Image 1: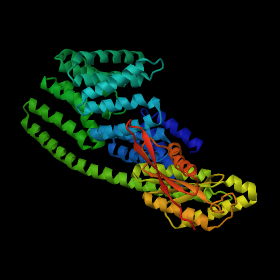
Image 2: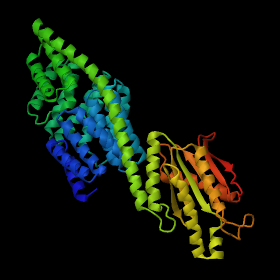
Image 3: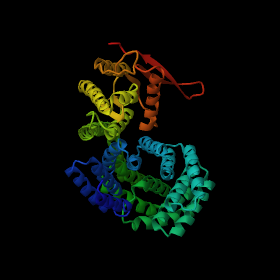
Image 4: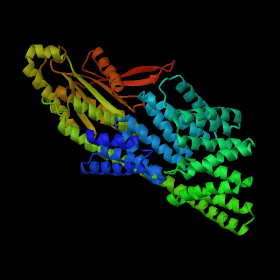
Length: 544
């Protein structure tokens, strides 16, 4: 990506929490520039910024739309950090909409990528988010296990992101409160207070006051709870950008205040909930506000008003139920569209690489073309769960051929074998041959059954024999022959190009070790110790 665009992207990303308008404007500008040049990488970076801006303004549907589209692109790229960021943001959007199972799945996917790519600096954030989501799913004991692990790891470091550490401690305190272990909750809140005082951050103090209030009310300390509630009111009234992540807690506190007759304090919280509902017009936010209003009027015995708000509440709950069904359908459709677009872009990229990356002698793909196509095939195979087929070809005793007939004749031999491969390639979709190095040629196939990959390997071997290129060193045949290794499998999540090539090389080595002029197919199965055991299937090449 252009350095100037990346500089603008990073500048806006660093200010995503404090300046959502910058995120929206810069994200749209970057996305427009990407569309002009048909650069989907640039478009996806713009979408990520727009999603962040939309989150700060509470437009969660747009958060999901933009972050999902960006995540779908980065999933099939080598920009693993952006894949993690977008998938994490997708989880945050799901969580804000109360879709906690989908949120957890998103965090787990981001964590899987971080683990695979050894991106250790993302572990704390993602494990915290997973822990928080377990707590939302009423698995607070699981949440505590995750969050304590993160907390203990962060304590061991000298250079710690104290803002993230405070969030971890807050979630840990919240999880203990949900387990009704209030002493432990208060212990971790006290540590949070110390960090907030050191940072001098009023926003963090306001968020901490929310949990302090809940814990105090839950333990019967109503006077203490009211003092913290006044801190919440001060925090909400001085807020520049609304915080949509605290609405559920605000609703709980307001309902408790109504139950103990603290109507003035409850009204401040209700005003905040209504303001959020007006801004976003989302069912869930309106439900929070209507539920508080309905219970308030019921408590003061204004039954007409209470009935009005309970009816509104019932209407919004029913509307939310319909929306959630539509939401899930739309999510499935959006995923399908995003994946279709990714496939289209991958094929366009494949065509560009094939056109630009040709070996000058054979006309096959060169090493760069091989790497690009093979990496693309492996990524697509993982996502679609289809096999990648590879045919690894080595010209038998090619050094001796060069020594006997000279390098010019050797080049002519390779050129004729390249022509054979190109003719076979024209008759099959998603099949490409590349000159891997020297006299080694590699065929790449996507989505074929093993028998079809083996059949293609046999076609190449038969056609090379049919060339009748003399080779006096080959006493048995008197002509040029080839040895082939074949591998056809669905790559596991942790398998990359290097690992795939190591296994393919074993298949070729077996053919060379068994006398050359043959084909061996590699099969992998688990041994008694759950390790990989390799089996080789011999395929005889016809004599022509």
